[in-house]
Length: 386
Length: 123
Image (cartoon, rainbow over all chains, first blue to last red; front, side, top):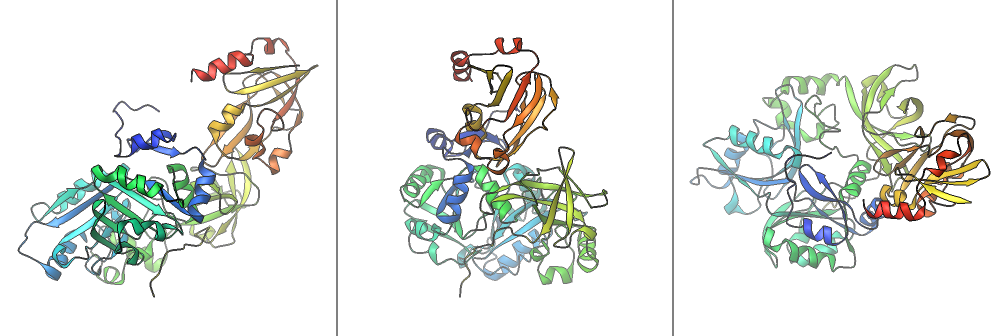
């Protein structure tokens, strides 16, 4: 579909085009959906080596306390108190240099977006928080952050810079080009550092289920950084197509598909993103619904599904129980190259959500037998310290 | 034996009154890795332009249309077990269906190789 407004480019769009990528419009940006080798090979390469992803369309930003006379732990607690009014995450409880995955919630406990929030490691940078929000929701997310903290904090958007993810078992070797610091990060840790490519924000995180890093680098250094990464024999550029199949195999939610304004984090299987203190204290948007779902179970739940035959089931496919009554629908579906078969995630009534439950997915008016299975489809390989 | 092509990137090869049909190498390349093919039942009567099969890549499902009218006489069962055959040999062993032609005149209206190559060059 054509959109009237012109497409935005990332600092790297022209490089992907030159490399022969198939370019598409995604969340208003001109992005590579696949390179010459195609989704399947790019996916497998990432699982075995290192995939490089341009995720500069996403929304990185720092939110910083306006009152710079407050410093250290007090500053962190003050900025956290502002942000905790919007998310169910224990932001105050973040250790210096720690990153967490969380959700922006509406008053009904529905998810407005999923995002990462991190606390700077540097003692001189307390009172700031690092955010990475989704491309498609970033304008409304940033407005929400600004409105909720008006006069008390300032938002410093960094979405004109380049955000590069390197993912896969070889990412730890590849990240060496940034110097000694980043490779000592643990999973879900971040640091700001001066690298041969200028100042960077590096986190050991990603959205493929693999070990890896996400690096925010200034737009003017982006091409040099990516060129240096691609010179490593372990690295190949990977498009959005494989990014989607990798995150689906990892059982991770895609906003607008597996998460939306009607779905609560509990229904989505994201109870682990709501830490103990927040559960005990409540007082986050939609906490009444969310705490009730935590103690009584939600009415529906996100599940993984695998087929008996070879037909993929796409987003929107109706899910019936074996009596023929609709009990849910697919929210993400495709082919899992590592699994070697179609896979899907969807929401079903709690009574149909037990692992092993057989269900009919109605693909082009034909019922096809699928089974509820544990997520993720492919085990996570995150790096855990110690 | 001539092979003809449609703007929807199907090909037809006619021998007697039997037309072997498939998708072009160009279409297969555009789709990317094919992971599933759904074929029609033998005996089904189709009109030119009817949805006759479905081909699914990692990313999406696409309809395949009957390039000519006829009765489904045979389907390429090998693609059910090995859908990657579409990528490997779209215009030969990766055929989808064989149709018993009901209107052989339809084939005459279709593009020959040179016209199809010119058509895809302009896409």
